[in-house]
Image (cartoon, rainbow, N blue to C red; front, side, top):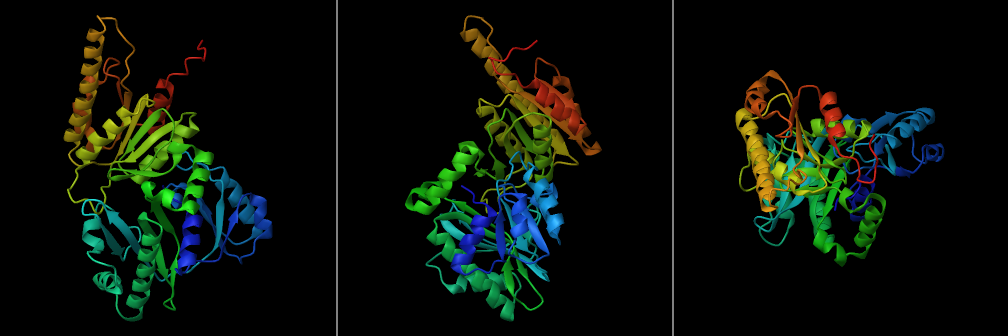
Length: 408
């Protein structure tokens, strides 16, 4: 279970991690009674990442601008989720920004401290830039200082950052977390540290041991439904929703854009997966094809998914191999359906496997198109397009209406 930013910062403040003055906004008119000084930053409180790219983060300097910006944010779906709360926060001028986290490595059953001097590091290159320290025994400040030194920090800055790391680890233990991160931890010209954004993932099996977390979980389920709580599946950050169009993308931006376009076109997104990034702490390396195959199987296993919409933009590693994996996936499900029909004495049953709509954009993906083109028939339930709007419209039109709905 992932918390919203304002909930995370409440925990940060309680444990002594510096956070900015802020105020929760439940309606744009609440900004007329704002208790913090302008300029401020308005942030959509949704579980999706990259809110700024989606338009969910706005800097404003007057009440009039703030009210107008808040109205836009409240009506802006990000990954199909509308915010119920907007966080108004003081603007902070940073001279440096870092990434810090404590995460549970389930492979070795030990916590790991993570740190990077780039807050928005590309996870494809994370192995080159991300520093880590495995907490092998009982935690001590030594582990935090060791990570700060590996990050190249010295003097007062090393002490400040390692102090924040110690508090992060304390919170990690107190709340039974799978992940707690600050992204970014900002440093101003005076050398003061400030957690500008945070993320917390609570261990699902530990919720019952924390009544306050159980109450938060019950509220989240009540508002959004069980499957709309942000989760992590395998190697990816993902968003689970109750729609009928599963989405696979080769980047956070493409996945978010696809999800929002599906919602705007009147469709209902289901599970959305980012195929680009593997976990920074994965002990066994995964390829793009590995993640593609796993993603297809996850979506196919969800019986509510009627269409799998794949948005591949620019370039992907080994495009022919990725296309071959899609061909194998489609052929496997077609063979399963044929066998099922034979077992029912030849009485043809409704085809239960999902349609696959693939948006391929970029000359580097021509090799993938050549592999997929022979299967582009209704019998194989495969459709290839280059334009994203067309792909979204196709996917939305392929979704079958409910059985009770009359279709003219």
